[in-house]
Length: 386
Image (cartoon, rainbow, N blue to C red; front, side):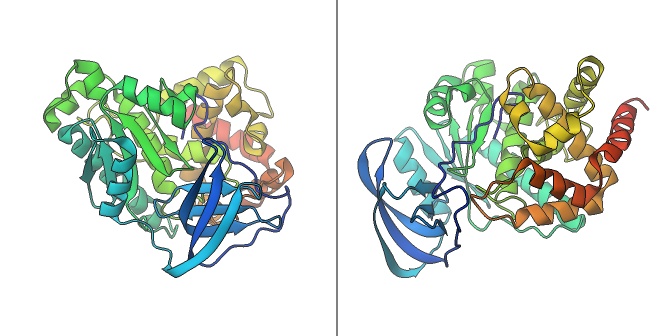
């Protein structure tokens, strides 16, 4: 959902209905919605389910590939209920859907929980699939042992892997914005897809032909592997019951959780080994920020709004502080963190909290922010110095 220190890759959410409209959840009926696509000015039909219906008739629709569509009243041409219940695509159906969108150069690599549409070759795509599966098992195990009731994704998760960085950059600029063209990958909340490219092709010319060759080439760039893990963590968290897409999830938590999992490991052939290791790049950045310019109200500003994530001058420090806060809360306030995550997971879609609402839900979970600040700073200062 982000670069390692850059702008968000959230594709803009179009608000449907008035800001405080009464939004109603729909049953899992299978529907066909016909609308005018604003991007192409052409009519298109979507089969899926209605997640939210606004008071003015606007819709949030999830199609069978799990892509989300915001349909404003002026776009909506018709809707009809179809026979049967909504079912997301299975792996083979999802694969055919992705291949139809990306062309003849792409093939499908399937794992237990992923459908990978790729032009990068079998070896690299299979290696990425194994990394995804390892991460998903570790993520679910970590949080289930902590007492958070998560579940395996209810449908295969989609990933697009391009052969070259140039092909990736051209697609990323169209799909998520030019700011992501230089990233190693991103997760789109709207489409529910991870988008990557073959990092070994960039590093060594031709694509790698074996797992050993892939791991040898990637040892020089473990931070890129960390980006893959970071974005894959976002996808898992939004599909296992931790976060809800298009709900008001605090940015510090979304990014902090991904950074908690991303930690590079130079001793591992894959560049990544386990969840929750001390993230030295983020820790060092936070220390520099603390020594140079961190204000007394820094923690509160991180919690109540997202301005620092949108400002190129402050975004890297906001990411570092998000990691530090997440690491501190998981290590020192685990029960409270689990309760906080449970509360956030039940938030309705398309309702946005005020700054005061965010402050209060944090205080309800962890206590006064000013009191927490002292323990937080003391704990982070001790890390890596033993």
